[in-house]
Image 1 (cartoon, protein in one colour):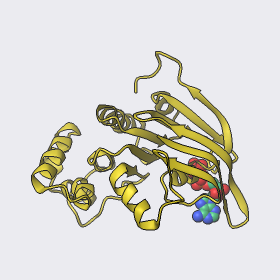
Image 2: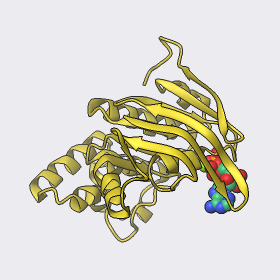
Image 3: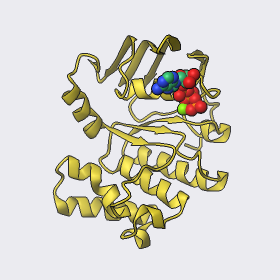
Image 4: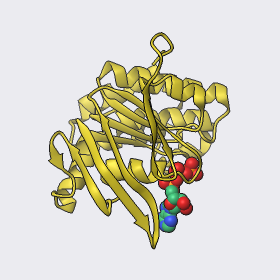
Amino acid sequence: MLVGKDVSHSFQTTRVLNGVSASIAAGEAVALVGPSGSGKTTLLYCLAGLIQPEGGTVAFQGRSLAGMGDDERSELRRTSFGFIFQSSELVPELTIAENISLPLELLKVPRGERQERVGNLLDRLGLAELADRRPARVSGGQAQRAAVARAVVHRPAVVFADEPTGALDSANGAVVIDLLWELAREQNSAVVLVTHDHSLARSADRAIALRDGALHGSEPVAPGSAEK
Ligand SMILES: Nc1ncnc2c1ncn2[C@@H]1O[C@H](COP(=O)(O)OP(=O)(O)OP(=O)(O)O)[C@@H](O)[C@H]1O
Ligand SMILES: [Mg+2]
């Protein structure tokens, strides 16, 4: 469904991705692992169409991202992708519920349906009582759960998550990721999760490992170990 072939990229004169090929199947949960500076964020951004790679191609459902115009690529991101970053990057002026609703508003989903989907997620994620608070007044774990809700609310084909639990302790991090896997699986969204945490990586279907901008292995997780 999402296929990167020979993806290469440089910043200034430094090559940071060197011919990486990786495909993500519909509904698949993939962990992207590797040392700091190995190119994980850069690869994630290339796959998500946020960076145009210098070399190679990225195609979503058979269509090359490079072949689209900027507007078309933005539209694809709005409709088919969801994003979670390290610190939640919720909009500070909006409430938790309004933040979660934002992708649906951009897609002009009618208000009744927005309220239903957001309410449902708030309940599922244990955030119902915080619906009307602003992000500054909730905990880090609560903000990241809201960020998960915002990333899945429009049922995207792919959720891209870059160290979404980097700022949380391991217990809170595991809660956030378990919710992400659970919601993604229910709606058949694929997930590409960048993580340093080996136990989180093991809960994916498969791990892609990068080292120095190149693939360093891509293995199925041993059967039975996948809690997903
Ligand atoms: N905007 C940028 N300008 C210049 N160099 C960059 C830029 N973004 C990343 N780099 C460099 O590219 C390399 C890969 O960076 P990237 O952020 O993809 O690594 P990473 O694997 O995500 O690391 P981390 O685990 O620390 O987040 C690093 O050497 C980094 O310094
Ligand atoms: Mg990174």
